[in-house]
Image (cartoon, rainbow, N blue to C red):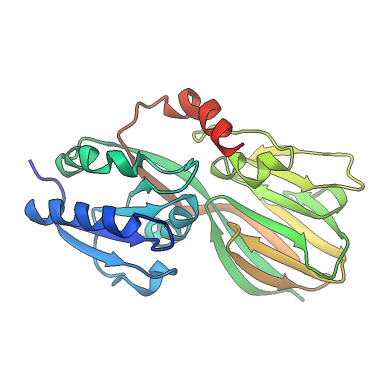
Length: 279
């Protein structure tokens, strides 16, 4: 039985073979009466009619492609299927070589849905919200090219918690804990944990090197001193900051959904192999 009617494709053409794999899957889906809407641009939100209800969104690339696709799919409630044409692919579901073999299971609805926490962030200046943003991996306050360090203060649920003199501070979801957070010495959080990790980057002065808080916490970072500072969202989007600016982060009301055909214990079963690939 065909459970799909409309699917979206986000294709990273910078990845060798992505367009070819997408074309082959498009043909199979069309043969099953599934409408495919493709996007070959860097920013998928410019491609799709947001009023269109898609059953699944396929991402062809690596984790970076999925991060872009997730910011579009999550508010629509559309599950993502990651087809890996990158190196590690922590978020992807199937390798490109296995995509056509796996496709009938998605067509038949033989998959389960994994939910992932998203972060909602705000940049406040002089009491006003200048920017809002959503992240699947992390929100990072970091020094710009002109600064040697960033000095900032952390509070959690309104309580002063730590002061940092560092290259930056990472606020990470469980999804992002295997990315920049891990490289900076932070903990690995399993995808089903209801937690947020806060980790300084190369701290010169930090009594707390890593902190894990409940996902209902309200986290604030205040820039006390920096020649240049930036907010970076999922390693892809940058927003400039001034001294005195506040970054407020909390759990988003929106969640990201991933369509999985792997066993439900896939994360712990494959974490060592994936970390070894990342090298």
